[in-house]
Image 1 (cartoon, rainbow, N blue to C red):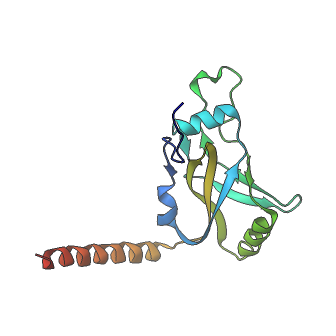
Image 2: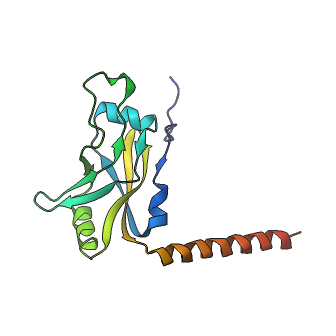
Image 3: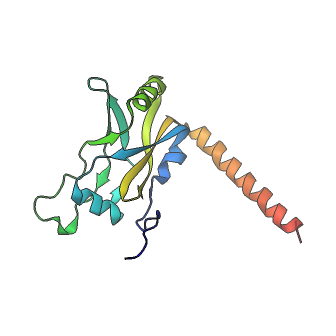
Length: 159
């Protein structure tokens, strides 16, 4: 039998809008409680994180993921999973309390950044974020452009 490595060949699902629309303050890796057909859809890359967000339910101090669209698995049959259901996120209680403290400020939210596999388990990178204003987005684009110009000038200088 071939030796298994830690790398998984499944795609890494990235929320590209997150870094454009939010200032990322802190990140945390959490697990997901998924059904079998959902895991197979994630392996196929059939996930949309764009509208997703997470929330801590204060009644039971649990972390849940909302509005993440995991498409139905083609071969699951008629009893497939619901595509936009509430999914439980797996984190330590001290991490959940820390996230609760960070998100009590007005304007902060928990958003998913990336979804990937680690040793056969689905993991989600969750971020504490604050929404950007339109002028913040313009400043970010200007900064990125100036960094690109500097890198370009430095490569010309090495000749």
